[in-house]
Structures are given as structure tokens and as C-alpha cells.
Amino acid sequence: MVIDMNKILLRQKNKEMYSAEFEILENDNVIGKAFIKGKLSSMDAIVDGTFHNKNFTLKFVNKVLTGSNKKFRPYNIIENKNITGEIFQTVFKKNFFSKYEYIKCNYNEEEFKLYSIGFGDKQVCVIYKNDIQISQIEFSNVIYNDLHDYTIYIKDDDNTFISILLTYYLYVIGKFKPGVKASKSVVKYYQKDSNKDLISKYDPDWISKGGLNE
Image 1 (cartoon, rainbow, N blue to C red):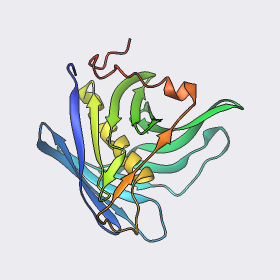
Image 2: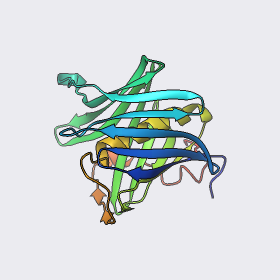
Image 3: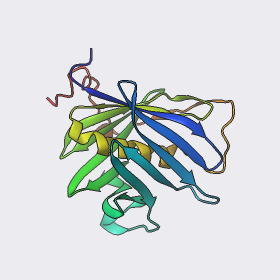
Image 4: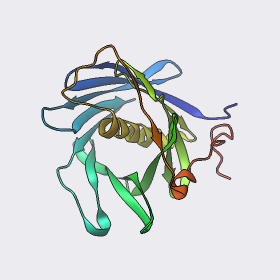
């Protein structure tokens, strides 16, 4: 039973050779959309979208920082032609034997972290703000015709926009394949993580508790 949670659906409408299109739905009403455009010889893309009356862009930044500030596949968040944040992959290293990748986002002077956790046939992504979980992304590991849908459970409306941006970023770096045209197909993804620190980020009862962090 889900208690007092906002539920957003990102539904992929189509996938062409170098592009993809999504709708954002809440209670079966379209509240936004996004057009994702890639190019030849590149894994990255530009995301142009709307959410209610807000226009946004996610744009790849061709740079990698090393040392203690490693950033992989960084994207700027752009609103009204102004850079308001960034999203990138990085690595948490507890010690020589324990490390894992995660996604970090700096937006409007706030910090968010997305952890993707694989349990074999099931994969869950959780988003944290200041070490408190604010949303959870669920999706199927069985994909038909290269069309991906994401369901986002969010505790507070204030965190909806950033959760949507992180979900688009997750799609671009993980499932978007520029140069590959969608066809009738069935693909099954499998990911199994063993890092205990990473797995501990997931609370299987978070949604049923209404997003309470106990």
C-alpha cells in the first residue's frame, strides 16, 4: 500500500536512429515532455524538455576532472539560457576493497545523489538529498522495442523536477543508443551488486511507508 506519495511516469513515445521522445505524466495527464538528440560517433546527447511552464536542457560538457574530484560524463542543467546545476557520474571509495559508482547532482546550491542498485532481475534507483531519501525510480528490466518507461515515487513536490532530470540523465548514460534504430525486439538487462554500503541505500519499505525515513 502506497501512502501519500506523488507518482510520475516518464513514458518513451518513440526511438529513432539518433533521437528519442518522452512524455511526463501525472494522473494520466501530460505535464511535460523531452526530446533527446544524439549524434554519430558519440555516446552522449542533448535533452531539451518542458515541465509544466519550465523549459530545461541537459547538455554534455566535454571534460573530465581527476583526483578527488573525478567527474565522468558531466552534463550542465540549463534553464532560460542559464546554467543552474550539473549532473555527473563519480566514484565513492571507502577503502581499497570497497567502492561503487553513483550519480551526483549539484542544483541551486543543493546536493543530490542517485544510487543504482541491482538485485539480479530487479534494479532500483534511489535519490538522496542531504543523506535523506527523497524519491525512488522503478523500471522494468525487460524492454520491448527499445522503449523505456520510468515510474518515479516522490515524497514532496519540491523534489519532482530534480528527480525527473536525474531520470533523464540515467536513461541517456545507460540505455540511449545513438546510431541504433529501434526495432521489434525483447532485451533483458541483468545487474547484481554485492557492495554492502551501496545496497544499504535501498529501503524496500520506503514507498509503502509513504516516503518516511526512519
